[in-house]
Image 1 (cartoon, helix red, strand yellow):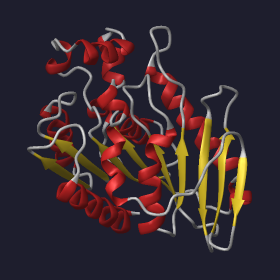
Image 2 (tube, one colour):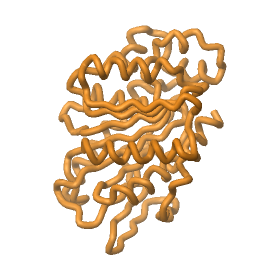
Image 3 (cartoon, helix red, strand yellow):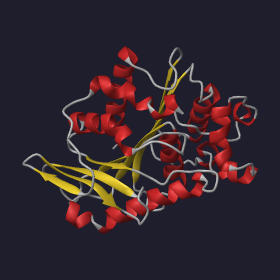
Image 4 (tube, helix red, strand yellow):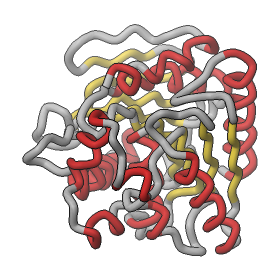
Length: 280
């Protein structure tokens, strides 16, 4: 799992000033922003989030939710801090929420548990909207397993049509992909086995099969040499988005793997920023 767990290191080249964090609930306030760490949205120790509220926010301020990766059974919201810093620096008018969710194991499937955690968090934001002084509109940025969850929640659980855009960075889209079902990669097989073998369940947990024409604008990033995400995963979703005429962008880097650095990183960052500004 090491390359999944540390996937987020590729984003560090564009870090801006970081907000120090300590263990336990805390609050930081200055003239620029308000940040609150480890806010509980449930009773489980993993059901916590950090929220970064911009200056001059109001009831129309939109929120971007970050979802970490780790193969559904590892990872932490701190892995997404580089994304949080990038968004706060480049899109300072948005609130940013960086969440943890319950991790899967052999006794706890990712689906629907982790989607239910996202729903609980969004309900918690709604109940605290007046205190936070933010609006109802949401966006998602997820990486790896977090990209899968971002897509799946946006396509299946957004009953109030709050999601204005969703970004998946190297996120799985089709758990019934033959490349997955026949994989000889023991690490990958261990992750996929968390969902079980029921075809109906695998279909329900696959964004590709849940996508509808009313889906929010979607931006996808994939690497052609990714050892965990077959090329068919991103390409199939792109084709389905085209078929349903959903606003989308698909960015494919043929020589990259499960994350990248350098000029392609800069290119991805600029494309993500432009997509958010255009659609959100």
